[in-house]
Length: 437
Picture 1: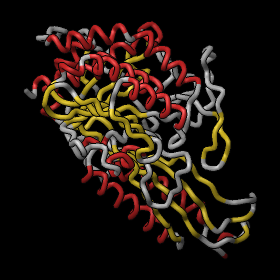
Picture 2 (picture 1 turned 30 degrees about the vertical axis):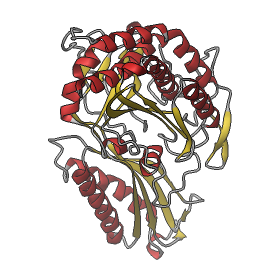
Picture 3 (picture 1 turned 180 degrees about the vertical axis):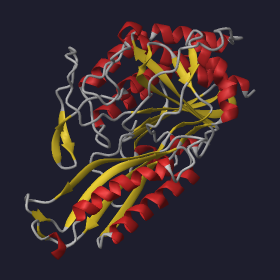
């Protein structure tokens, strides 16, 4: 998941109750999920100790493929790049539902002090970096491996099939080049046809978050996570002596004015009543010496919105603002915006239909999530077929205040949360297939 996760949480007013007319099939997978808790924890610790960056998840993919083959599934490897797809054909006719987990880690040096902490280093953009599962994808993989085992155990009773999607590079591939192409794993796998042959009718995914207490599920109908665009601006001026700025064009002053002007894109030019938007500059670089005005300045940032129309509008106004402010100073701004993630939108009817399943899996501890300005490439699947994406809390309640956020070198997961994730993913599949009959 891209950078941010949940903001300060709303009061935990738990909605609904665990009451659900449980089918015999759901009852079996819930019981199996509980029996697989220790195995899932062992898998997570192993994967956590051996993290791999985007499109380098070879060890993780091999572990998954071996497990799925042992369960008797039809398995594809090397999908997109390192993706693994398992198809579990049920014993009865019915539709196909997909469950998705992402596998990649981040270029972060772990500082948790855990006995299974990562010591791994890998190449990231050509430079060797420390690597850590700082966003919880190790938990996602372990949860889905366990859900796969639970569902395989009851395959003869399944009225349909389940496709397990283990995806690379949700955070972006480690060899990513800003060339206007989009190389994120969700897009890779959609383009590789993972939602076809056989055709997927609905897809489910989850993300762990340290912003929620252990075992709580947070969901939202409609837009739940923002789009994300990488913003790159190069301001070109004319170099001159710092003592004689009138003899050149100062790109540093122009850049300062651009950064200030960009704040008005959201605050004055975008209707944020339906949903928030964010434009942030994260880096700026220019100049080599204190008394030389340089030729150019480069800056980069991020753009977050909750809908294609707003995304296009904000992109256009960012470009216009930067170019025209630079021109007013006699400089020139070159603007590149790379839309890496679309808005993650939960299908309204599917969310309502599966809400009792989520509540049941979480023992009634399900809440409505606020919109989250972090981003997810689950969005690419949900643009093709109805999708439901939800959050799973992984922080003990007594440690919630001050818990390290996702992407932090101190990010930690309470293993007790995994069983809730297994129950949710497995029973979403069984309940959807059973209801489709």
